[in-house]
Length: 167
Image (cartoon, rainbow, N blue to C red):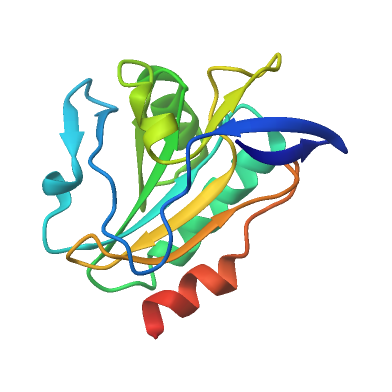
């Protein structure tokens, strides 16, 4: 089991985050229109998965806004914001914020994603939510970059994620 912290307190994270060079695990998630999507839904595109606990927390909101801003500069790339939030809540947040360069996806029907991708918060009050992570995939779903953020309240390394797309 992986370990991260939340305000300095240890938390368990089940599963193993995909490592650079690996092919991304399969996934099925639910989009804002309540349709199930897979990696094949974004075939031929590079993908940045901004995996967060909930858009209703300050750091998650900041990272969603930041990736929305960065996404407008990326060619042939889709930014997927993945959380356990209900699709309605994520859609409402993005609408209220004017965020149209990211696509929100929910694990609410497909919690198996969390362990398969190594982001399942476990053995804590936050069980059922995702840990904060970023995974960057090429157009063939090969992992270019992955980061499990060690302290839940910290933002991911945006520059490292972008560098992986430029490398």
